Length: 524
Image 1: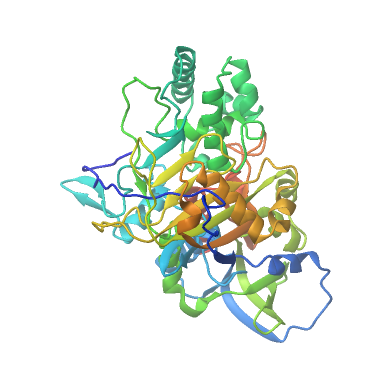
Image 2 (image 1 turned 60 degrees about the vertical axis):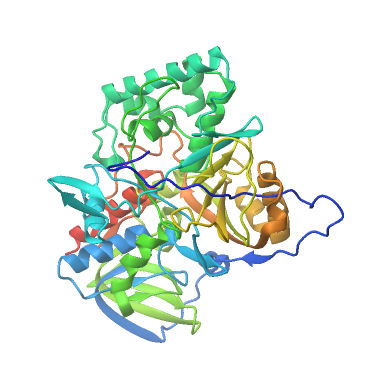
């Protein structure tokens, strides 16, 4: 997955341990708790709003509601166009949405999204952002990305059949039939790439019969149609879907399953000549590195701890009512225009007289709950044989999605304390949100430690703290009929404009950022 000049190579020990510890030693006391998201604030939207006279009034020209990636992108675009008379309201204590950062024992780590693929020319708005931040520059007429921020090698490994292997596709010891199915799927991806355009953002792809046909069925149905039944291939494709979309083969559309590969680097079967893979930008704090820099210039225009309960177009503009969490009082904002950068299900609840497109979209979206656990380790872990410790480390067959090492980009010669960030997507769970919220921190702690101990038997003895972030509606799942190039963001609807990755049907930085930038262009 390298990009540009040779990447810096680094080896060190990371890992996890059994639970309980072996022998007569008592299990280590591990601290921690739930952090990062306050579900009680969001639940205020469920309560009927009693007519209350606002305690405070504010006036601004453009009001942005929601400070996730789309809202921050809209704010940046307004600033770049010379517009300074705007404000941005955010529910949580900090901006960034699913791309926020945290820290454990002084080590920065992600609370959600943890990388950004090097964007293609289909995402010029994102390219411009990276150039502004000094990550992208021209060298001898060619674009180069700062190696310090490109993911260092080794990037990925899989714990499979008791050992680590390079890459995430199971290859060691698999049979000829499995390899044949890998080659067949690679051919299908190339045929799809040749027959239609695949882009990120998806809205840059002209709608085609290929897209429509794939968008009508699930990915598992597509695999059945083509006789792709190999368990190793299906595990890998299911992992990819859960990792990117929050749910597996049986829920996501075939469009989403193919888009995962066709929009970027394709699918390379073992033994085939690999093309140039896209580089990946990553930081200890994940994509929080980006959102922190997008939020920094906003100053007092960014208002956090604001629970927006009403957005309504009135005679001479837009009125927005928000509960100020700090004071507990209702405040009213009046603006000429409003950019609604909220998840679709929230927007449909708070926008009075919601347009038909918004209500239909809200009724059709299924959301994936997510859990993000950050484990602080005070000493390096011993590693099993095989591939070297990597940035992304996955356990074959596990319920979770593995872990990334927050210190992977660190060039220290001697390994030390680190934070491992583990991910669990619950979009396939029949009652995922309730399951996520009702399980105690101790139950999640024990489950995470037990799962990672499969590959790292010493993890519990070296873990000092586990902080867990829960997202009840983390991302829209691209189910059949709800995503792809056919799903266009509503353009300006009177004084309102909508921008959120939900309108693309799946949650990636490029989609949200481009939508926010475009929404601001309509409101200059």
